[in-house]
Image (tube, rainbow, N blue to C red):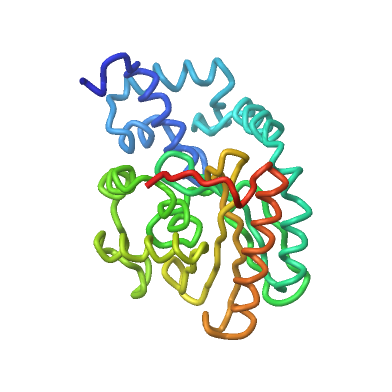
Amino acid sequence: MDENKGKVKSLSKAIDLLDILSASRHGLSLSELSERAGYPKSTTHALASTLRDRGLLRQLQNGDYALGMRLFEYGSAVSRGFDISELSRPYLESLSSLTGANSVISLLDGESAVSFDYAVSSSGVQILPEIGVRLPLHCTSQGKLMLAYLPQSRVLSLLRRQSMRRYTRHTIDDIDLLLSRLAEIREKGCAVEDGEYKVGLRSVSAPVFDAEGVLRYALTTIGFFRRVSADDFVNAVRVTVDQAGMLSNALGYSDKTITDHM
């Protein structure tokens, strides 16, 4: 079956422009947008003008294009639709308080893990959580946890569609090795990141299941732990698993519910 059948190419190109501007820290000129997107100036201008007219882009005084306020409205609407944000808040705060580190809740969106809420500890070194940022699956505890509970065919498809980039010397960039680690994660019921994404940062993620026994979210503790064998990190693992279990129960999950996705 042709995967491109039924797709609207102009819409795809418009979304490319939004992605480019989202990754930029400032507005971009028509020429810059055209060059980065790889589209002719005429095509880029037509797309950008349409997006501007619908409020998805705005034009600055110097003529550069930037993201429009309508996107903020859409984002706010998405946030309001996440009942999980309100439900998970006590567990995030409890987790952060009990570990002295930051806590984050994430979901799988396409080919990335995306965090949508967090709680910051009042003690220790503060880390600004990467809320709304797309995190790689192969080297973050959130990503590895989500991969561990997916069918292997989908895992392979996801990993082959993206680069297993080495972010640090600890990053696993071999698919077979990662698959063996995913099996261990599923058996243990949590995933650990030991400086694989950012040097010095360590995290643990535990699964949050829905009433059907499907993994929907990853609950994570992240901080500058000295090592994964240290008492404070071992405690963080235990507390994270406990809090994720309680949040799962709040979503209607029972440990008697068994759903096999492998």
